[in-house]
Length: 399
Image (cartoon, rainbow, N blue to C red; front, side, top):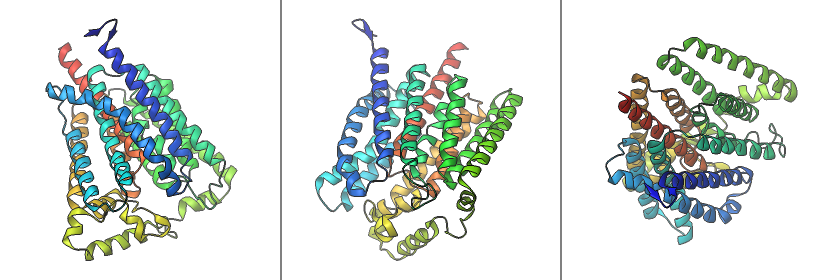
């Protein structure tokens, strides 16, 4: 359909690229300001969240229009939208404080919902386009530049210890690997691997290693090019081994101690936090089980205002058991969709499997649902399932 000399597709593409560019700017801001206090972050968070929601709400209308026509069918988005709604209801019930803070927190949860709807709708209708991948590559590059800017400011093995913002680019890796351009895939793997290893994040390294293994293993399952996948795997392991060797030479033996001291530091305090929250969950009344203790309630009972470092504990403690059930349903929908893609030997099955692996691992040892990483994750998931549905539709038309 045409509007004058500009088609609807051109309008949507231009606006999507604009929305992704806004995502680049917000991602850089979130990484660079990671060291700021909660009060300093909150000072500008309201404005960024409002801008983000306003921009991506337009993209979400594409999904709603196509959904009304009966063209889009996926339980993944339905379950995630339901999770967003129920979490916001719980947030409103338990909120105590000024209304501006409540609105800001609501925007925090609605933004990922809008991004997965918009990215899925665009991917479903138009498939993979180079312009989209260039913006994804720009986002990864922005993550790398912003990460380096704070990395050189602190001693990575000193008081800060490590950087959680290293995870930002990791959630975009499955999206980059869906690109047909080999150079972009290789550069993305190298950049993200360097970020994760240099950050000394054991959970990130575990997610990256297992995610890459799953990606290459599923690639062998769905493709006849098993030898090529094996060669790529061996080359990847060699490159990472060489990089790790030089990193150890540069940083000394302290980095080995950091990777190996999980028994001494109890998972950087995670076990103590989990034990504390478990005891409180056992003693709380039924009302708190249903509605939760309120937004960021887990930080009240941990030192240095730390979160639960586990999405499942974070959700059940803050927002109640019903929201946890919806979240598990969302993960179950994503898992069954990925399994079907592998069985059908869909081209994007390796990327879907890699995304699910990384998401599940980091969801168990860190916080995704309360940070910008959830938005990046939903951009990745939205595009992947949209592109996969587009590919399936094209195969049917070719038969």
